Image (cartoon, rainbow, N blue to C red):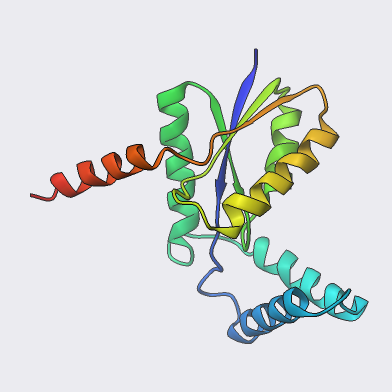
Length: 169
């Protein structure tokens, strides 16, 4: 069975993205999210254009170390599991989760395992956005098996954190 892992990451805006456009992006995002009813098409279009521009902004180690760390984590996970790992971002970066699922399908995946380093419950991305992206992918790839490895056992998360603390002294 051909297994592919999707590493679902948050994403960060690049620090050299134009400041005014970053502010406009967040303003539009807030207005659209908090607006009763459907937002006007002009607001949706402006937001979509800024989202595309931000996601496709060239990433370097200097302007987005989070992007690079995400890909390092994917490589380490691939080395440890032996499976191909594709990074997908909830926000700000490409590829989006939907694009990551599309890429996994192009590789002929029979099973997609989705994991995120978001360790605790209560986050909108891990509880809402990632499962919604998985559901969209299931519609596109009905013969593919999907597993979302989340939420994590809180005792194991605490053990991991304790191990990290113990390495400090």
